[in-house]
Length: 131
Image (cartoon, rainbow, N blue to C red):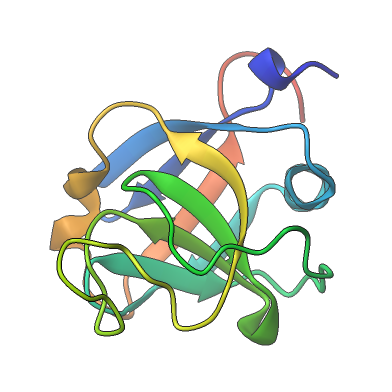
């Protein structure tokens, strides 16, 4: 399956955005687990949630970019990064510990700033077909 077809919709309360998953093993494992619904946690300008899928570290990054999707191995968590976290220095975006970056939000990821802990996040395949 090509990367272009691996588009997902992330919805948390009134916030919603599409994202594209890359060709990594992490992205393939997340894609296979969809749809996923879980309560969000927040940590600075990051939302994350347990997806109940163990994925090994894959070129983990200690600093990520705004809009990156990451998988945090210690928490089996899907992370959406849209700004600095409590671990950041200056304007960098630093996860609690290195994450597998496996995709990017299309458009403005700061729509997720209004999401509060406990809000249900749903990730599903976007577009027609692909269940």
